[in-house]
Length: 374
Image (cartoon, rainbow, N blue to C red; front, top):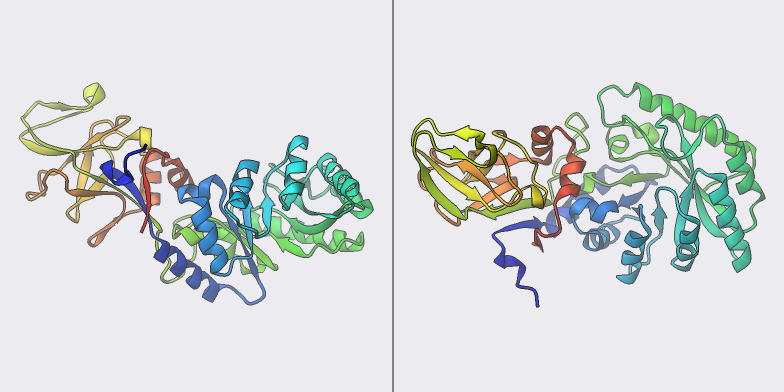
């Protein structure tokens, strides 16, 4: 029998109320006639895929998007019946599972499209297929100048229906949109070619969260939103929607409070030494939980004030300077990511300290940190 999650003095809070409110704000901002696919891969970016999916679908999302078969089957096992797009490429052995669980396969590979078509023929049905166009990201998808083989499969198919055509932007969340617009132009050329070939995909989609915010011309009739409904913007330069707030907060409690004397060192490698008497608090959380392994950088919030990190973050703990916070005491609540009082530590702050991106921070929180829905 596992102990109650509240018995660990470090945890993650997920606000269902904020998540619903974010979806309301997005719905008010979204143009009429544009449907939404909620990308909930990687356990909804660490927020809990099943709960996030249920809120999204009850708030107006039409589709869900995942990458792995396990992610999709977990949703189906939870009773979620909405259309699910399988982003990425599939092993041949996965295809029967996709068909059995009414999953929509996406591919830019003619071989996969043919195998999906053959499976549909054997079952006497037409399986849904979305074709991926590589418009310059050079990852998944058929190159925009070489769509003939992929289109040929779709045109001659008897076991699939070409339900969608899509691409993915490489720079939609950056200030310079030049390449994103070039990708859009390439995609529009492919759409024109598809229509000439007799294909009429129901769904056209290019916009991720960055495209949704900053490139309205990319919306078509479906947008793919992952990080935005969670209250985190894809970058610091994207357009803001008033009222969007982070859904996740990471907290802990000071497990130890002690006084250091001049010359005392802190942590592995002795990366920080006291130049005089200091009060320090120990935060019982570390890189084993997904916190960045940083040294003498960043801070946490204690009693509404910044407490700088001292020395190296270890696997399970790190020290913070609480000398200026005279009333700080053992078991005080610590905010590691989120707001406390008038101050806030964002996923972008943690990403800056780590030298990474907010997506990495959100998906990096380990499962051993209890997640509590509030």
